[in-house]
Amino acid sequence: MINQLKKLYPSLQLFDQSTLSSDSAYKWFSLADGKIVGIHEKDLAPRDMSLLTTFLTPYNPTFPVLTDEEKKWSAAVNPELSTDAQTFSLHSPYRFVHFSIQEKQISPTAFKQAVQDFYAQHVPILWENDHQGILVEYVTKEDGPISYDEIIDVLMSDLYIKIHFFVGPLRASLDGATAHYRAMVDGAKTISLYSKKTVISYTDAVPYLLIDQTPEPFQNEIKKSVLQDYQGDEETMKMIEVFVRNNLNISETAKALHMHRNSLQYRFDRFYENTGIDVRKFHDALAVYLAILIEK
Image 1 (cartoon, helix red, strand yellow):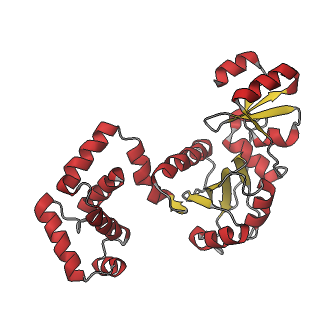
Image 2 (image 1 turned 180 degrees about the vertical axis):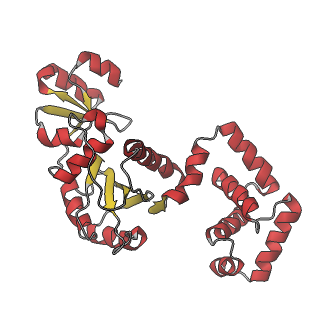
């Protein structure tokens, strides 16, 4: 659709926060797939507006003006959208943290003001739209990284919003920042299909990202070959999933499931007898865990 619209409206461009902040002559529309496009008013006659609003949703975002730091990051991760792409010196490692807020719950300006209170220094925010974007968190040796598991309850209770964080890995260089930025944005969309956790780290997300890239026939083969007769056995699947999440620790898993550890050992023995897979071994546990995620 975008290519077709581009032929009719040469000024059409995809969402870019810096353009939104500086050029009020653009009219913005939301497509069915969530992408935001803008068309300069010089290309729009009154009848064009009427026609476009019948199959596109008018979009009227209000964003805080970009800081100099945010302009640098925007140019670094979106060089194709910037006329002054540049590199700049990093004084500490950083990580990208994707956030997603329920639509129309809070304005970008109010969200930015609230988020800044949790950081020791200013945090650049790169918006994808008015409810999703990337926080650029600088990580110093003195302060260490923010624990999003600890602050999310405060954020949600103070702001009365639902929010999800996808926390990226630490990086010390701008090399590959563009590709990494796009991988974080696309990865967050993928993860939302598989997990409802409010905070998920990049390493926790890797199994979901791998599964999403695996063809469905091969997914089914993995599920059948690994789970065998335990397909659909929700109780056993939950038991093994909790075991993996507790780092294959029998005692911690038994406590979490309110079971005696001997009962848990017996269940694992039965699973081994029936499948030939011993989930107390790391590689076997990993295979079963992946199969469980496919099953779910």
